[in-house]
Every structure is written in C-alpha cells, then in structure tokens.
Length: 112
Ligand SMILES: [Ca+2]
Image (tube, rainbow, N blue to C red):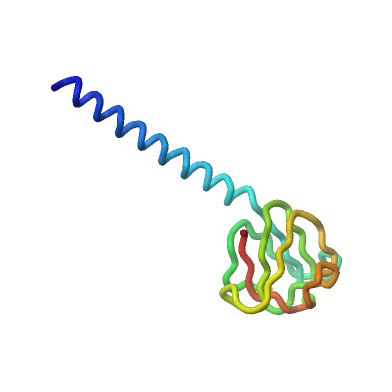
C-alpha cells in the first residue's frame, strides 16, 4: 500500500517535471526572438522593439526598415496577419524594399 502511493507520487512528479521543461523550452524560444521596426529607412524615425507577435502594429502602414535581432518573423500586409506576407530571418534591412517588401505597407507581424 505504502509502496503504491510512493510509486504514484513518483509518476506525478515525473509528469510535472516533463510539463515544466516543455513550458521552459517554449518560454525560452519566445523571449529569445526580437525584432525592431522603424518608421523611416536606415533605422530612423519612430521605432518599435518587439519580442512578441503584433496583430495590429503601432507603426501601421509606416514601416520602412527592419532589424531582425533573432528568430524568423512573418510580416503581413493587413492587420491580424492578413494579405500578402514576407518572411525575414536575422539581419539588418535598411529599407524594406531591399527585402522585397513595399514601403509603408506592413500592418502586422508574428514570429514563425
Ligand atoms: Ca515610413
């Protein structure tokens, strides 16, 4: 009887540890990704430093340059991840045009 309870507790502990490591791994991925978007080319004007998805970005239809610090991000034409989209990995894009994205168009973006 006592041994059975001990075994059950050990299983519960194992499941909790497994769940915790999955949560930690996920949280680590999210916090590691970072992107900075700018209102003007050459990283000028207003900017937004984001580490999480932006369904309706504050710089709507203004983004002209982008620095992807980490992660891969998908940039969309419309709010709530609608319309055409472009994927950018880590790098400095002094004008969105150089990455094939029309100027002053992006309205939302998220990490992929
Ligand atoms: Ca602009």
